Amino acid sequence: MRILFYQVEKRQGGMTAAGYLKHCHGCSRRMITRLKQGRGSLAVNGRLLERLTERLAAGDLLELRLEPEPLSFFPNPALAVPPLYEDEDIAVFSKPAGMPVHPSHLHREDTLANFFAARCIETGEQAGFHPLNRLDRDTSGLCLIAKHPLAADRLAERVEKRYYAVAEGMVDPPEGTLSFPIARAEGSIILRRVSPDGKPAVTHYRTLMQGNGHTLLEIRLETGRTHQIRVHFSHIGHPLAGDELYGGSRLLIPRQALHCGELRFPHPISGEALSFSAPVPEEMRRLLRPVAPPFSETP
Image (cartoon, rainbow, N blue to C red):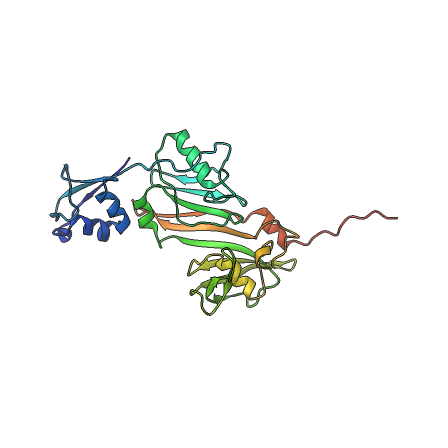
């Protein structure tokens, strides 16, 4: 069980417990509802608080107990995704391409969630699985997991991500912003497209390298639409290498050449600034190198 302590400051005296948790410590309405339902508890000066509408006084010491979350995914100890960082509040993993984050009908036991469940059993930890950036199955790179709802609440909208992609062709201009609304393609639950009726989507990019008919890009998203990077670069005539869904070729790489390479965020409890990086995979780097001609014997 995660236990956190807070002391009410003078300027915060008179606030209700619910207001204090929401406005001073980033608790969502859902988190507060969980406390009201008994999934966790709040004590003031050692006394269990029964009503979150009770008002607090300056100097009060609050003890927030977050209830352990039951294991909700099938544990698969055969998977291996070593964490880059882990503590009792968060974990950062470098997810390989081909591994989904969440189980689905076609992927019940081979996901990051399945590995995480097995790891919890191994370590004896009772932790929740709350991904803060949900990468597509074939997108590689950094995944940030919050281990309890409070960490997830505090990190919402506060994670800065940098992606790296290899697009087909020579992207011109070498640096810029793509601002095209994105909507679900008619008749599909997966495919997205640029549409005037879509939701706003803004992608900032700059070229890092060009070669072999490809462009390596560093990308920052201002919005987080499904398949945003893939849709935007396909729309301007430069689909990602390997991204057959949006017009890319799999001749040189068997998956979309997209990688989450940097994460920056404040720790949800201590506030410490954290940053992590994962290098661009070799299979993406190879796309920018000249391809050797096929071997043929001299007649």
